[in-house]
Figure 1 (cartoon, rainbow, N blue to C red):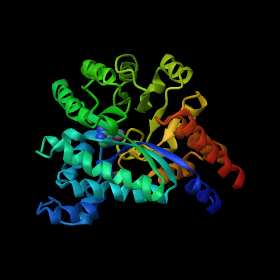
Figure 2: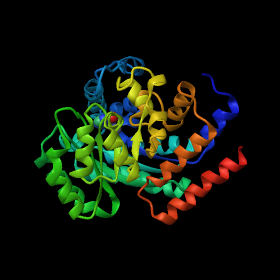
Figure 3: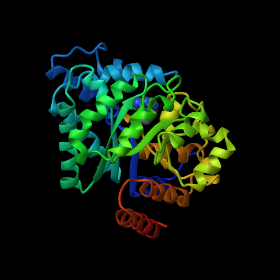
Length: 341
Ligand code: HPA
Ligand code: ZN
């Protein structure tokens, strides 16, 4: 289905939030090579093109292997700043007014890069985002679920020195075989320290994992959540309790969670009353930022202006902003809609 120019402009222009974005997944090959060069770090692939050619994945693990390798060029605070700033410029160009950003501290601390270096570089760019573009952000460190709970607890302790910069904690990396229950005690500690929680669940793992992140990790949002649809009781629970799912269509396609975007369950999710937000996950690896995700769905399953509006409003409702801040942003969506009917 091709979409006309005016609808394309509508999608690009509508104010939106991004709630499922791994900052390490925004590292474009060109910047990766530039950073590698100044750090005297040798990338296995010989060129930007060779690297892009390697971005073909049959599952989550094949992606994660390349993604962690890519992140290993990041050494200095400036590297983390430059990566984050590049994303902020992109977000600004796509009318993202608010972003809640994941980062993976253990990917770096395990290579001898200090937690301080990582968060200082990212945070400085987020400060500049507010000052230069008025973009607001929240920061969400994620625990790597293929590592053990003790390592997660250690990361939580390191993060506590930066309590004012962190809103919530998340859980990512290889899902199958690493159930959320493994991190129950860690997430109890996270909440005791006053942070919110989110977690990846139901991307490759079963609906049971989505129940676990709700019941054991007490998440405010579920990241991905695609496999919730197989469990009617779960779908009703998510819908009744307005628990948002941060869905990432192009990621789903590239990691073969769906075989064709025409089969993407987005419409079914909306029809079941689920609070869905559209997001880009790891745009540098999957080939699309948030607007491309909206556009890809509009082209494959067909979206109406009203549905795009609903998704944009859900994206602000699902943020960790205050009710007043959310209201202001949702009003901007309404105003945009009225002006562009
Ligand atoms: N799933 C799990 N872990 C991840 C992802 C994802 O989509 N992206 C980056 N880390
Ligand atoms: Zn993700």
